Image: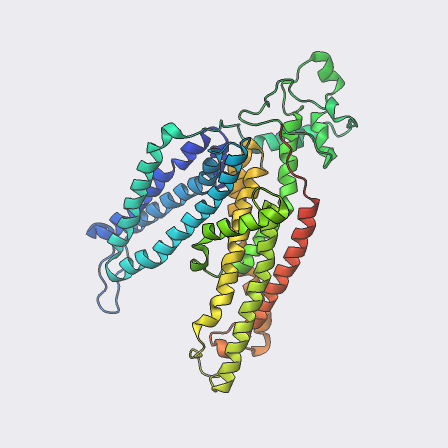
Length: 457
């Protein structure tokens, strides 16, 4: 994903990165063939005996999966950035519409997840995998056609070159000039005299006083001043280029708290609570706008903070329900029996509602924050960082679960999360996640208060 995202910010432009839809569609077609063509799918099972797939069948199947992964890596971080690029930041009305776009974007993702996890799964289980794969393949083809039809109407952001290269140039140049003194007057630092930035498709960024050690990369040395040669960016960088790296460093603590949020909530799956988020947006935002005076009701940082707070309530609600379930198991003498406790599923409604609310506030806030605060030529990369919190959060969740299992099963104990949950302490695990979420929120509050907004010319 990171490599494809860099291409989106680099040379290909976002529209070509989104063109990875073709890879995704081709991957779905390959999976359809592997599940439909007799020569490409394993033989039918004879009772309990299932013949193994041949190497060729494995190759076709995994080729389709890798094509899907390749296409997804190009689409996900670029499509939100490309969609937001269609709105003019200098127009107040379009800025408001851009906030609504992120809500609708996330709404559409949840609708797709709902259909795929219900209808498509039912088709695969009850009709066949061939038809189950062919339906998404058909819709991917329709998506490509719809995307291409809108090409004459799109606004295009010029690719600005490799952001990784520019960041490395700042680090190298500042190290080379580590003995130079950074002037107190920031106007003495190097910047192009033109109105436009030296980075293609990027506005100039105003100098900030943080991380002054990196400002050495923009200090003009006596040798450079004498020769008048300012072309070697591995020795001299513009203020805008230095500020790009500063912005990413300032974003890092905010980004890291998103990992812990996903660690606590992403293992749970919620679709229902996220399917009416734009209606909530229409109700909540006008009310919040009256109190905050902000055109979007809440700032991106405020939205994420609200989501982190709600995540604590979600874990506490889950712990309360589990305590009620264990108490009922003891009353019905079901503790030593690995059977379901007759507790109504409606008791889970509060935690699922809280989960949906936390997800809406945090993830949509993340999308807007990483788009608005990222440098113009690095928006796809920063959007990919926002998505990376989900995968890293799942890895962290697995690590925590492994650690908890290891320490709670020592000495022959059943542990917090045994196969028979009636003898376990799953509520302890939820309380642990609630405590972790609380600490994460405290770190976020400190990081958000210290964060300085991007200033673009």
